[in-house]
Image (tube, one colour):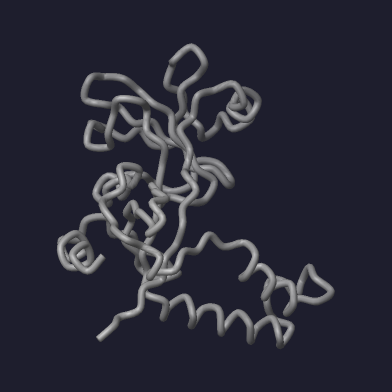
Length: 202
């Protein structure tokens, strides 16, 4: 991991800015041979600060859970420990770039929500093929069409999707039609990922 941190991360590749602490997207192989294709390495300080603040808010009745829960402090603590995909840094044997991480310069071309709770876009590849993409929240990792890499993307068509007949249609102003047909469309979505908090070690 030390070589990866100094070479891959040092070059700025895989970087992903976040309110939870800037991260670096990679793939990881654990000591037992398990391969995890989508992992974000982060330093823990920013996340710890955020959790401490949120705990104080819930204890004082000012947090998000306080508005919907009879026991907000307990429910918030429970959500921290039961809903996270975390791996410990000492379990990792090696790391390498993840093919599912959209390069940051390409990611910056994707512009905001298309309709409430959904960001949709179409990737146009160098060979002219079009592929619908979309996410409700996470942008760290995405599925890939077979035989393609994100380096093949020639153009981003924001706030668009492909109909079942292959036509590229706008999302804005057509939300109802999209929602009615989206169940039968091929849309490449965000992938689940693990987080690993890495402390500096002397």
